Image 1 (cartoon, chains in turn blue, purple):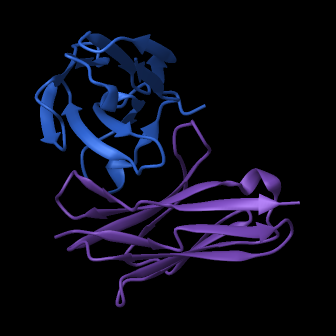
Image 2 (image 1 turned 180 degrees about the vertical axis):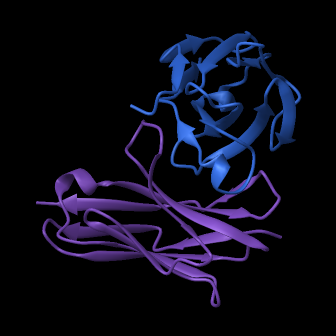
Length: 115
Length: 112
């Protein structure tokens, strides 16, 4: 158990809908990262927050957005969902933002299925 | 452009045998390299982390090596077990850069 929690575990929805994925980082970690992993694909970095502020952006679609709240939990919002958005979405957390201090601990993931 | 390449893409070996996975990177300036194990449908779990001054690091039956001059790393698994079946991901970090560069992984299958 990494100490990172994600809810829900599974999510099934229809095209065009909007969903929110939630992540709680390990106690003491200030950075939260979101990743997308499609079937048989590698991890694709979406976005990073550090202590409430957006820190780095990866291949995140405009239909997706995220935020980190004062209690450090984070939410990833996916809207106007398409079939291709079906994937595993992982959250990771780390103490800091670079070097050894950004060793990332991953949550169990949310499996999103868009029908 | 920072890149991490892993080989082979997939590997099947018999239980009890050893194997070695490769990682080549072009990330610069190099800070550290991690190997993660990812079971199907689960989040990746860190196996080892090495800085540029470290050549070898072990975690049980897993031994990672690093050659910072040739920008290569390997992960050696000894006496493989069925539970070693997973994807192994090499991740490299650059100094002063928060973004990690992920390899696409090696899918290892252990057969009885």
